[in-house]
Length: 225
Image (cartoon, rainbow, N blue to C red):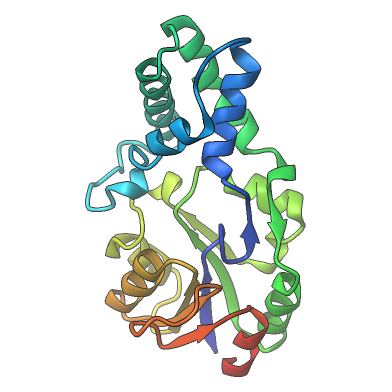
């Protein structure tokens, strides 16, 4: 049987501008009056996250240190947009609690069915995600944690897809098994998975020549189990 590695955001669950929306909300809840727009926040969030520079080794920035790194990015962004430092600090520290609100996340309609089907067919499911350290809090809240044997999360291991090391960490738990990487990102999931020797499945993003399979929905994955 195979090890199915599932990306999270955009693959198993969808969120509406998760990071930019949360950062903007943190600012609005902290600063009564400002001229910053949502598009300003989106521009700031186009860089600065660990997964924007996956070529770097972030093994010294895991767990709480990951959040310290990100809070510093949010703080610099707010200050660059004209927010005074005291308010910028308060807003940046508020992002964390907002990003982890379960109401931000929605499972795709076929997520649970496909995870169940994989387990029925004796495959092993793991999450392999570029994400914050507490991702399991969200999978718990969504009721899907029990479908997974492991969660390999960049904020806990210090490497981001498509860097090979994060895939190798997942593979180290199951020596000599066949791996399938399922995700919605043609670079992080497909090229990263390919370079790690995995079969790759692109979902929700149309066709990509680098993927072994391209499916418009998760349900079609059942055809390769």
